[in-house]
Image (cartoon, rainbow, N blue to C red; front, side, top):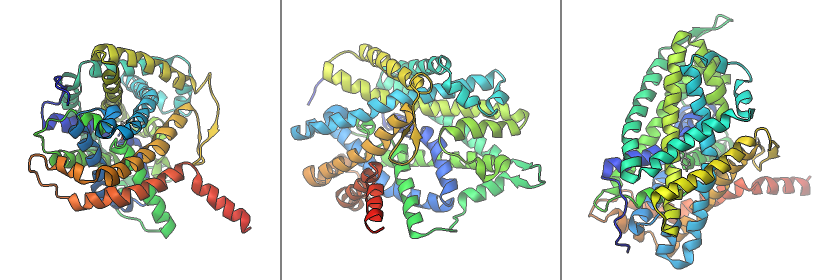
Length: 475
Ligand code: PFF
């Protein structure tokens, strides 16, 4: 074991808030509400909640326990357990390396909207074509991305306890207060449109929470399940080395059982609140058609909603985008920390020097992503049928392709090579009760590998290929 003084979080609260900071990000705000609105409201939420406490829990336990037990960051952790499995750390490391290149670009977009709302240009942001005009311009997205990257690098540069922990302790409670405030405001809204139809925030809440079974067939249910599963993955920041790295900073006397439950609660709580904040507001002013996913929800639909709110809209706009910036920053910090920790351990260089160098490399890579909307513009059809630019391709490779692959290999490694008892021992290190132990064993040995294999094959377009082949053969 290494005897060097290792960086660590000061205690359980610091760890939980930092890990929650990683988990709570744009995924909670722009994806969860949309999926809930599209996939039958309460039905999706119910499926998602079941998956969080079974599947999400098992993946979190695996990552965090590996991190704390080995004391190594993602790139070294698997090799420290078994030399033959060192490759797994290396491919895991690829995910934050890829995500880092585009997360800063999205963070930059958010900063730009904060500036717009503060300088009273919120109504310009609500005009058609504003967002596309902005991201396809050459200079502005790069400038904002660089500011976002500098803020991230600054926190990582300051260190685990003095940077990441301290930052998360200020930002995360602030974020919760802002989501609650906007959610309460959303519920009080009411609007009568040009056709004389009045819609209220409470009706919007009903759309969000009441399960809607209309048109739910078995195959529709399966697609809801898959949506919930891939959302869960991204949302909890699991199987990408981040939670392994953060786990390695947790002191040995911390009760991981409690901390993991708190991280799950935090991430799911913010996702649920984000839905209560966004769905009623969009429903009141735009009906269900305004519910889009991804950047268009946040940068196109919501500015229109804020504009319809009148003078209150610009205040809500400022609070909203500051909240998103907080969420994005703490997530980006966790990605960059994983890269910095990995490079520090491989090269022995100092944190300050490594943060600087990774910052510069990321800046170059992110500039290329920004230029993907103008100079390097092209359209590529992804295996899931979506058409994307460089940013979407990077996102697809890391989230749809690599993450299930890594979760698959990791669960085979834990379930069948080192055996679940290795993890269980770490969960019970101080005599704590690992109450979901039996479930954990079943999940890691059987269910996770199967489901991950399905998700992985789906991401490669394998199923579409097979279905098309059968269709050809049998006419
Ligand atoms: N979990 C974050 C979210 O839900 O938005 C996003 C995220 C953080 C993704 C860190 C990937 C990552 F490496």
